[in-house]
Length: 114
Image (cartoon, rainbow, N blue to C red; front, side):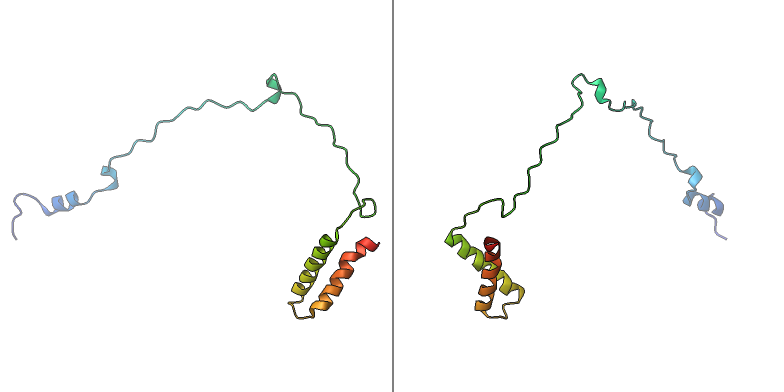
């Protein structure tokens, strides 16, 4: 058996393996002291008056019969055009434009005639 210049086999094995006990222990972070925060107390502030607002008066709902509205012929034409387009769009433009126009005139004019 060859000689290993004064080093035994057990010494080689032990020196190549590092055990957890031989590792350097890390120090925990130092504790930081934090002063406690006092809860917010609005009454402690000199300008802390209770915020109370008076209820706002409720305006009555305005209905078509209570408000006189004037619609110009150009506005009426535009309203009918828009309504006819929306009706045609709902039907995927499968119907006749004159039918959509007739329905739109009835829908737009109904509140005016009431």
